Length: 414
Image (tube, rainbow, N blue to C red; front, top):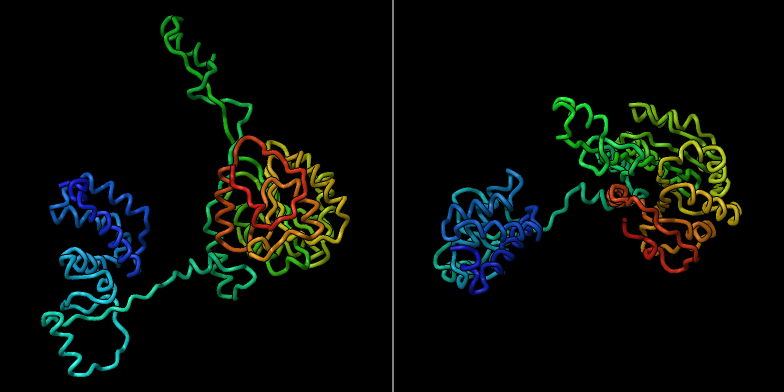
């Protein structure tokens, strides 16, 4: 009997959803996507045969060895008893008697009165059922992924730094002018002559070449002024992890009242030594912010050196600027026309109350291709996916000033 035949009454799919919900409440890592995979797999097995049905559910819904005993208990509880004898509420507070200790032990309960205990045994047909309290638990890593960098304790900071170092980074690729051996439309004349000489000069093979792709260069401009002090150290860890995780060279700069290139210190294999060298090189930590002057210095001194080959530029700043907004607007326009994509990362954008009303943000906003938050690990993971999916075409810049809420500025990846 297949799943289509078994579900003719409309109950099997409903029960699979309920069983998935039961496992999730018991702490197993299950989600609706796995139920979809389960339904597709059950179309290939005989549901009436217990081993096939049991092992199909076990292989698709259990991914940790320590969860197997709990899955067995849930399977026995849910699928062995008739539906009319066990309601959904019973699934979350009872389990069948077993010789071994339950996987989830109940808390200490008040002793029941003898009469109430006797009545309970009569209702359950003489069977003594054990009570299970199911509590929702959260992974420590999941909490750290959502916690703002500014609110981390010392221990959480160290854990976030380790998780940040384990992140995988990959830039979107660009099409180069070079070609390589492959299945393209252009003939490879050298290989064509060399191969067909073996056949006496008769053209029997037609080798071709295809375009060659390379990752896009990445340039980072990070704000280390006083308003960014709560995020500076972790953002430097982020820049170091990003530079270490990419194959191509990452050009990194920091600015407060002036621009400083930190690409070479970040190449050190020891992160502590690299950050120490950066701190010794930079002399304007936690100072004022002159974003326009810093970008102007980058455009005139470094733009032609590092913005070739379709570079992507990341500006990390909260937008608080003490300089002239006209200078910032002019230099943002110049920088936007010189790079493939200009992305502004703002740690304040993760707050629901944030509004981009500062002079710096208002002047720079029309020239941003993407305006994204960078306040926790989850936002960094979204950024990593966004960088991987960058399209080969350059998006059009916004030329009209925008005055609505900051959440509306987050543009989907292209």
